[in-house]
Length: 155
Image (tube, rainbow, N blue to C red; front, top):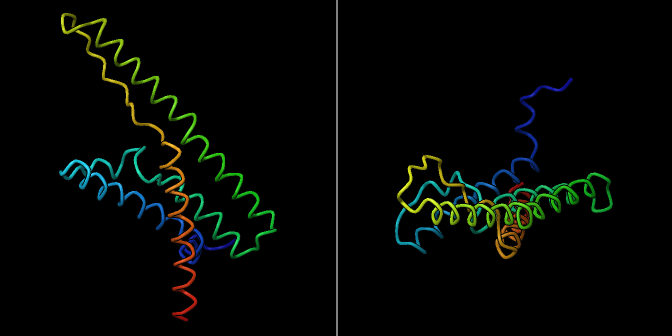
């Protein structure tokens, strides 16, 4: 049985996590430029530009492809996993966000400040637009390629 400490030797995993963290950090920068205020909550929320989920899974799939081969079953598995995650982010969770927006609007109109409705509002920003998913994917692939280039030249 391998030592759990060896997980830190898994370059593919570490680069994928770095890609996710960079994507999440970029949300803070984009939010700062867009709204001219620092909103650190974007670091721990879903949705927004770029998709950190997409950056994570595409970096993972790219790393697996580079390490084990583009024709390996492992790359196929990682790619299918990435497609499912990105489809969910842009499809299912985006639709759930739209439903939440409509439900919040219905509550606002039905209860119209005259009724005491103590329920919290539903979270509306759940998913991503296709552009956010594509940007996250491009970021994940780029970070993996840059990490590979950096590691090869630094050896």
